[in-house]
Image (cartoon, rainbow, N blue to C red; front, side):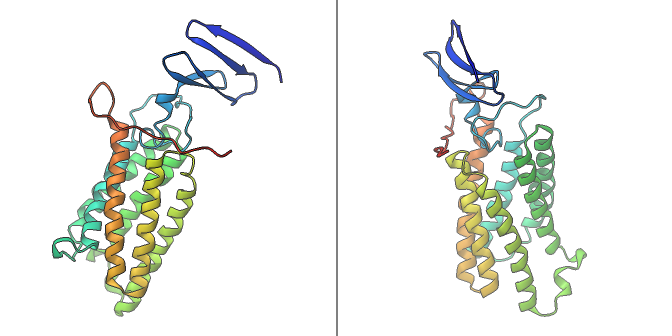
Length: 257
């Protein structure tokens, strides 16, 4: 495969004829990446997930122009997770999670589902699957706690009900593990988000299977941490030089391939 060398006042780079070849360069002030025949600033592309909910470190911009739905979905996930996790941790002695039902239905559920659908519109499959699925998680969790659905009241044996909830959480643990595997080439902040979320689901599942409150409370603590990491990633997608002086830096994970 032959190569051509192109020079400009902004610097020089190598351009591969093969589509999708990634080249790196620097014009003396800012680093950039050449993807195929398009040139992108690294600082714009490095906002993996926190900014644009893209798993790839150097994903090209979508062909259509939309607002970024990722911070909305992450914020909905973070707030709902925070409130439920505080209750799971038994903060201030609170043990009843009824207050979370509204959040789970409308913010963590419906709003996050919308954000996931908009991620599909901006050509981000991972973001669409993740946000839409966790939106579905929160709505299904709310259904378990709304008497009108009759789900929980259908169980006359409390142990059977607890084990059924544990299977529900186990399924989401497996799903989260699958998504966690797909974040290993993103940023440390986004990898940490799914790492803590995975541990949260594992602890909550074990807590329901064993009936040990201490394990469930530990899951609540990890859930609170997960919520703050989600807010961090959401802020990374909202904050820019035009609206704030307080920025967060997206640190890409090392590549081994």
